[in-house]
Length: 522
RNA sequence: GGCUCCGUAGCCAAGUGGCUAAGGCAGUGGAUUGCAAAUCCACCAUCCCCGGUUCGAAUCCGGGCGGAGCCUCCA
Image 1 (cartoon, chains in turn cyan, purple):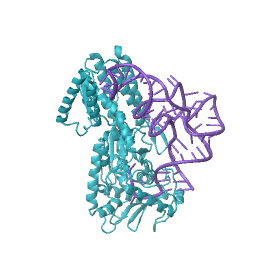
Image 2: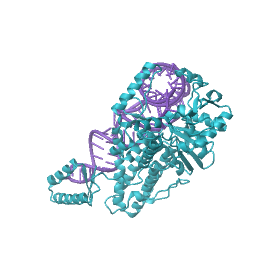
Image 3: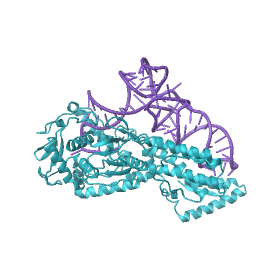
Image 4: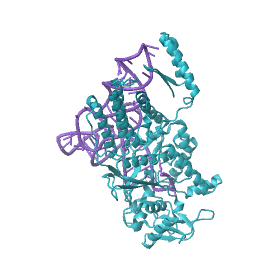
């Protein structure tokens, strides 16, 4: 099966082909760096990181660019509030963003261009648009003239009449049409400012993406991604200005991820709420929004706070367990539930280590998709080997269908169950398994690793919970375990059970296995 | 008001024209265990409602009800 992706532009799944064979140029709208990232900001990076991993695995040479918008009204306002400079604030928040990406194991981004370092590229586009008649200067600003763009609105399915009907149209003095948007904004005193042919000023909201995507990836890119909320007006306007400038298609595929929503309440995490069209409702909505901020909806807390409560790997899995185009309800309970579902994998990795004496995390799995899957005759193990190959195929077929990570995750759980069954069926746990069966197990675990790699999980041991990483604690536990083992030997089960129950109260679990007793915390 | 999208088990969720509707969490029964833990096996849904198209629909079309996003420089 070949790769198919859902394209917002056509509202359907299309076969995936690239401008340049074998190469993928991908652009994701990055953050405006004005406040610490919340979980919603991580959805796009995690999803597109997974998409990049899958494309690379499928044989593409992928270049992925994520911009940093480091000049913007929100930055200016917040810097003033905090009594710092826009530059300092942007720098601090950029670092916060990088930290969070690292924690979430988002490692596939090739370039992070900064808006402030591409002012000239923006000027170039703006000038071309003016020359071609798509834009007009006005009192130090420059506006894009939407009515000159015949197919304006094609991405979000709007047209200019509809836009007029919906807005409380207050046309800013001189704008030719209310939908016309700023390419360049004349700066006021005290604001960051750059010289331009139209006077000192700063970029409009959308121009930085057009400029940086073009500069780094070329006139036509393969994949343009972002949150669903950016489809209009941001992506619509990017598309309009880019295509009007170059006369070429801006992006072949537009991919929009669903938004994280605060659990049990309307509205997305950290965002505004829906509204009706009149002023009274607008005010009510704003009050609602304020109330929510005061209430401090849990999901809108910073990512760093979230990591204090949940393992980042669990959070990543949580984001990938649902299809990327669907909205996700944030809730601590759901993340905990995902955490429980992952425990079975961690148990399996421990089992693997008991059986082979080696760490699952040291397994080296293929980074590229094999041209074809072949199942060699494995004698008595053929049935198992065939089952593993079938599950791998199911995983990859599912990913080929618009990066359906949710469905692929299901195959991963089935693979776990199949491997556990094999371990039990051949009595491998406990040390003295048939070497041939162990070899088959290693290859099956390598498949598991290969697939987990695509999701960006299980690449390194999770950090141990506090208390479980202490050598002294382990020594004490060995002592307790030995005392309990003696009690069990003497059939003194009341003492043995007392020890185990009391340890249970301390969140310590004992596992009595034939060869010895293991313990774990948390 | 306009434009999109969604409604599958107690909860989360994949599947969008055709074998017995993935998977996870929770629950129940069983194997295993001194009892547990871990693991395995089994059970657990006719897909919001109504109408239509079709040999055949959760899947397509129409209507209804319910929910979400955008139309505010939100990822």
